[in-house]
Amino acid sequence: MMTTARFLSSLVVTGLCSFLPGLSAASSSAPSNPVLLIHGHIYTANPQAPWAEALLIKGSKIAAVGTDKALLAGKPAAVRVIDLKGQTVIPGLIDAHMHLLFGALEIAGFNLSTPERSLTPEHPEELIDRVKDYAQSHRNERLLIGRADFSSQPPYSPTRQLLDRAVSDRPVVVHNSTEHSLWLNSKALALAGISTQPVADPDEERGIVRDASGNPSGVLLEAAQEIAERAVLAQYTVEEKLSLIRHATAYLNSNGITSVINATGDLSEIELYGQLRDRGDLTVRTKTAFGAVAVPHKLTPEFLADLESARSRFHDEWVSANLVKFFADGSSGMIPPLVYRPADYKALVLELDRRGFQLMTHAQRGDSVHMILSAYDHAARTNGPRDRRLRIEHAFVVTDEDAASMARLSVIAGAQPVFCCSELGTNYDPADPTPSDRWNTLLNLGVTLAFGSDWPCSWPNDPFVNIQQAVTRQIWRSPDTAVIETEPFDGANNGGAKPLAGKIYTPEERISVRQAVDSYTRGAAYSEFAEDRVGTLEVGKNADLAVLSQDLFSVAAEDIAKTKVTMTLVGGKVVYEAGSALKP
Image (cartoon, rainbow, N blue to C red; front, side):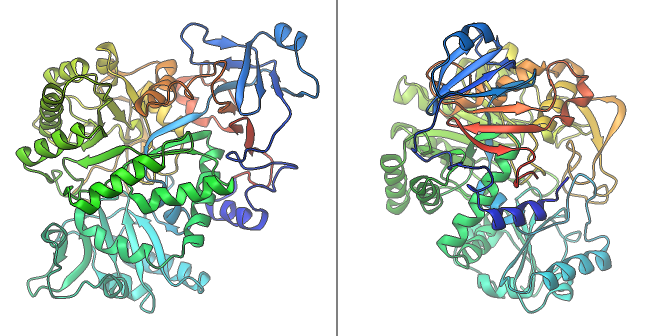
């Protein structure tokens, strides 16, 4: 299999639209001949007609779904016939929670946390050699971006001095795999303007790890990351950012992903997707939330103006906004730190709901889930009925009472099965008997599940690992990260974690393959108000689909993750085909 680095190199050489003859990017409006897929095992995700043999595409839309006999008899002239030879087809996968710009930066950098192994600061000499080797082979890069597992809290957290030993002449910024802390060398601290003097914003200052003399250690927690993120993004030109995003979306297409919901972002990021759309270079549909990791919202005139600008300018099937992301808590330390006082959060939710924005809130703690539901309930009662589609992201720990409230309020659960399961699931409190990741319970109550990856927090972005984990709830353990004191890292396929044979976490919360696929398609589409356009393979909807290497509905549950994508179509156009120049 081609490595990520070689995959990106091939993109640079071939360009996104040159790997197949006559292929144009998905968001191009260029006319094309009809395409007829036949002899397939097509899962439509339409409850009224879940299976089909054939599918006809005209332009960017699905024109017919049915049997081979019926569609071949009525096939139009100049149609391109693709014989699936029994391959399974599913609707294009919708990653309902990810961070595309972060992923674009990190997929182009060095990665010390992969399914094979996590190289942590507990192996300092080897880590230094790896980073040094990367720097020497990327001499033209003025800024080095990486990804690793490391403890976020002193005295266990790493220091700038260790990174300085690897690279001292250029800024190095290492993202924690949780995306809730950064590790910087001295050059990167200087680039961000972090010195012995406190920074102006108290929320940002609170997350700068300092020694007793006020010297920054090199680790930035939660909201403090924004100091470095602003400095890093300022180093890239618009064209460089667009190139990075093009490469990242091609990678997502290779995994069958056709739409994404960005769980962080701002107006400037949304404008990048708008530029790619306008050039015909966007190959995933995007919806982007306003929010930054663990940064409390402040309803300044500038922020409200950006929200309104995004809502009025970006609301088509390729680039959309009207979504605000809150962080009720973070993901650093033994217990995720709280971001808001309940009264402050409640007031913000009430006002943004009054203005008609869709809201989503990150919650890893059980008490955070309860606070969110209370605020959502208050907003709905005060502002009156409307189709809100409020969301809670992760929702690791949900009590019976709160699960019932989620159902009553029609709150969507944005879940990432790839983070499950250690022996404690994803519950941070070993004294709390509440099981985590209660997908079956929520579905049985009528709660909509919207599955995603949280990429690049999970790596790689493999939807089939997620689906397998939702079906099996296998317990995983990583010997590489066992020494890290402050976060659980034992999610499926993350950071060198391996499955423990025969070990299952709360098997009663397993769901079926169809339920898992539906959560990645129909449920995710519903979560972004797009169910009339994507999420199922029905007449009149966008022709977004993925052709698979095996029938994930019939293989053994423990083999679902072996599924690969052989072809991806977005808007009726092939954006990925195995065996092409873009084969990862």
